[in-house]
Amino acid sequence: MALETMPDHVHLLVEVDPQYGVHRLVKAIKGRTSRVLRDEFPHLKSKLPTLWTNSYFVATTGGAPLAAIKKYVDEQKNR
Image (cartoon, rainbow, N blue to C red; front, side):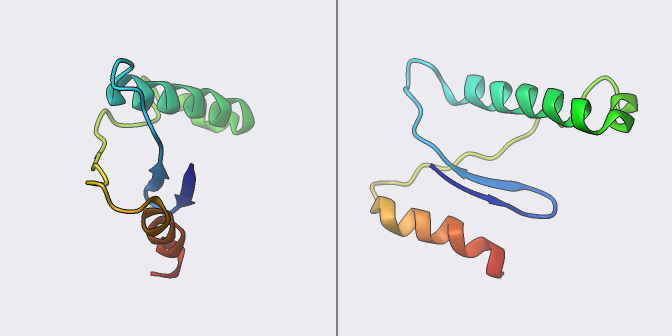
């Protein structure tokens, strides 16, 4: 997995079982991070009903080499 946090979004490179579904993974990530952030920063509890929006962007790698995709994600902090 590769991860790069930007000021207004996050880049994640993950492999998801097609039977599980990307939408489930996104929901789980947003739910968990919302709970963790609200526990760590209590003032965020006033951001109801949700901390995150329902939107997300997903792209497939199209068979590109995994090393190239990881490099792209890692280099986002330099842009």
